[in-house]
Length: 113
Ligand code: TYC
Image (cartoon, rainbow, N blue to C red; front, side, top):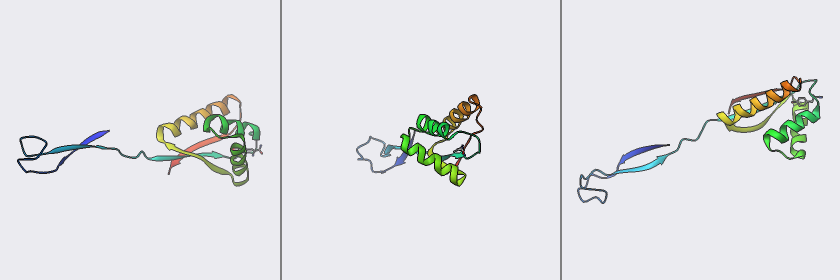
């Protein structure tokens, strides 16, 4: 977080000091850029594995996970969440690592919102 000085007043009797220059600071918070995490369909990854991934890494209920898995299966892809860059990157890595370990061709990617 950066603190941005603002000249508020040049009156000598200002409450902030003797100089007459008031430097009030306010926290300047920039909203982080957001990234969509996408899950892609393929013909080989078992549906139950995809549901498991969505529950485990995206905090979805079984019903929500099943619904999103079916959307990906039918439409080819779906956004499974929107996160800051670092969180999105972590999710993609977690999904790709587990899919690779289990030898499923599941693909997970991210893109700027
Ligand atoms: N199409 C896969 C099947 O029929 C299921 C699947 C769903 C795979 C979603 C990937 O992201 C995916 N077994």
